[in-house]
Length: 407
Image (cartoon, rainbow, N blue to C red; front, top):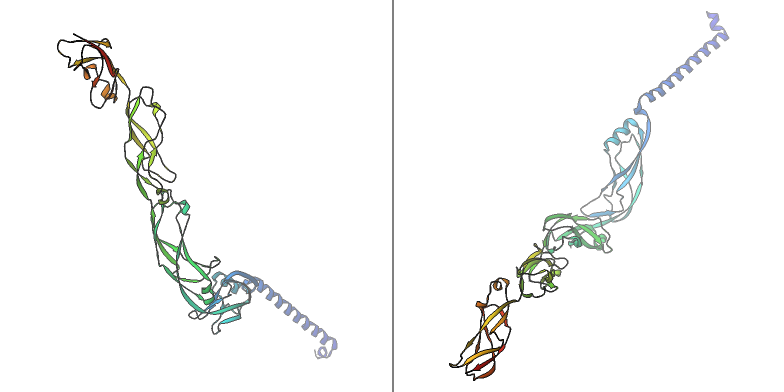
């Protein structure tokens, strides 16, 4: 055995064996480490980017306002999945700019974060240029802008309105306050036919060029109430006709069943309306007295709840009463009278009146007389006196008759 240890080749073989064992040990340990990383995902390195991460602003809000801070930044995270995955799911981190302690003016500041140091964090943009200004507050009146007024229900119009509050307090930098041109709310009145009560609407702020400004408005909303009116006026009704009555008829009267109607429309339309007429009634179709239905002719933009009315029409047709005897009055005793024209001492009478008053008439309803007072023997022309029922227009066949008086 001692001879082996003294042998140079024995020592060399032993050294080679130890070297091989050491190499195998290191190789196996490296493989185990690699396999372990593959088996446990928490040790795998990975990068993910989160877009639109909101940026918080840390500043003395009682005294300062800031501009130039982006609303969002992109954040890229690199690290093991074991740390990365729950952070992304929970989003329990923030990006922010810390402006506390900085004076008014322009500054370039870094976008910071509160993400675990176990991750590599890359923020884009990394720095931002901000402007810090002293805070200012001013009061502005609130204007009401009604939209779609041309699409209000026909006949309706805007009346009085109320807005609460009537002014608004706006807080921002003095430079922004100086840019404010108008503060307004919008009220949509499309298809509205009744008043608006306590509608809540957002308050909008615009600069002098009409661009909307993102400022702190208190309160953010206003309450608007608007009277939606449906004006009306009462006007007389007139009857329009066309054509002529059939031959032999005459028009005694024509009148609407109502003297006036209530017309609805906007004030601007109603102011010029003095009366409402019917559509034309064709007289050529009327052969007797009675009632006809007529539509009202309404100006554009107006309405009447009932657009139809009745019209009373009274017509007359001449009726002839024949052979009405002519009586002689005041003939002196001893004288005789004879008729030359007409030779039978009778004449016809033309009567015009309401159909109901005329149709039952006869000769007995009329008295036709001549007076022979103070007439001497001979031929004479004497006037005829005609009497008949009241309310009728009567015309005798003769205004004068020729008679002969003899002893």
